[in-house]
Image (cartoon, rainbow, N blue to C red; front, side):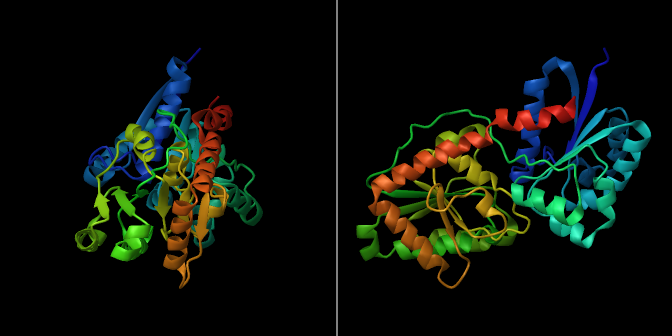
Length: 350
């Protein structure tokens, strides 16, 4: 029997060792396929980042595509705009299955402006949004019938001892891109409130940042780090370090306004570590955060900082409630394990 060839086509970020939500998810799909298909399939990859530095490598890309039986296609908007048409034509000529796991929540808005893609997308083997709301939107608004929800998933490397709350210091963690669109300005306003000596005496709060830094927000970030002594930047975590590191904290905070946010991987990472989350009411967050159970969802209005502060004070003062939310968060993480993801994806790779 001929070995099935599968190509994972996406932004792995290997050239510059880029580590963000897109590259992490793309690499996770490679790990998922290698772990579950083993020697029953020949799995290849193409890192689209290479084309930024060596555009002639498009020849290699096309050669890998036509030799494949299945392409696991994980594009950003630019790749979907400029390469999907070619990929679709090749798939029809060479009888190639296209399996499309979405990264983020931007596809519905993209299709609103680029309806010419709807017909082609309706003919590929499967589209896999990160949450049910996007799935329902693609089905109802664009009549796509090949859509199946497959949320962000994680491999379990470490099981935390839940709960493990801190008694003398309420430790908050932010883990995402270090950019203003992810809400770092709000985080620093919260840090400013808890840096007041009188407040600190009653509510000792620290905030640690993890994540890749970007030039667009770096000057501001440095200035704020220097201003407050209850905040600290601790670099970028390797995937295998995340769960163990996060388990030492009390809550994860993510006041994101990031365009195209789907189900943030940071929220899933927090759940895996047994952490409730404090997040902004943005995009599709209600599909992954259950207010009052796995965390709190905060409205983006003039009372935003005040409401974040109120939730932090409440959790600090109500240890039993915090412990209960930690357990709920960890239980919810089971819905985002690799076995759940593989059960959904496997039939489309046969």
